[in-house]
Length: 140
Image (cartoon, rainbow, N blue to C red; front, top):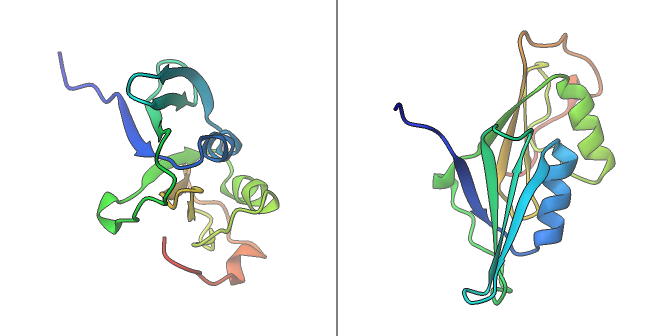
């Protein structure tokens, strides 16, 4: 059997905020597991059952922010309309750190500062305002 991609795990400080963010992005919660003995909760999200999953790990006793390491890289998702997704995220207060000026790629960050790359599925959309004139902000 060939290698099968299962999931990517990220640690989150505020589980509700993380689930809300990734749901807004277009994922849905598939399952959740509380592990009282280990004092953590696992939440698995995906676009649909059987698709690659994102595992959110919430350690109950960890209140501090997790350090942000650029060596992690980013999670990448293909979207049907990059402008519509960025508009939805911006309307919810998410900063678009690398706007989709080219109609093809954008970057945002989750509430736990995980870098998320959004890629237009198929050909790039024609460049349009306000995205075309926006500058990058922060790190992505």
